[in-house]
Length: 116
Length: 113
Image (cartoon, rainbow over all chains, first blue to last red; front, top):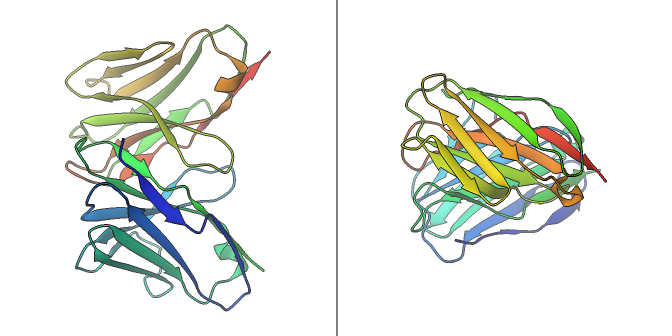
């Protein structure tokens, strides 16, 4: 199947700093990527849809100025958590649907963010 | 938008028994229904999926059934093994095309040896 690579796999940062997470589709072009957040023992919740060459679409309740998304190429989307706070600590996972299997979703490895 | 409900939230079975997890969805236009297995701290892994033009699909010990009229689909695991222990999520796409998935709340399956 297609491969989606996410980096870093874990990061610890201080309150008030910003963290950038990268999501790459390695063997297919992804015009659309998705960012999910997963709190402990909970489901994956969609944060935003990243669109190549245009603005991201954010889900209700997700602050676009806090979670900056850039999708500058067909293989890379980045999520920047700005002015991070402890409540932003979570597991962030990116996903892309594409390749030859048009419907299957491929997930990155996830990024465990801990804000101290 | 799509709403997906999943139950049970936890399921404990003895090794060798069968496990069934059920989901319902709200959007009658949904046409693709995947099931994911997630181990602690790892990404969801697709274990089986079904498209709306079929009612059942099987892959060795895993099967999925779909009832479009009732808008529900189920995951069946037979001859469970301890390594099947994980959290399982059902999902459905939001609309058609390359849309995001809406996930169920998850089922924690524990297979007792």
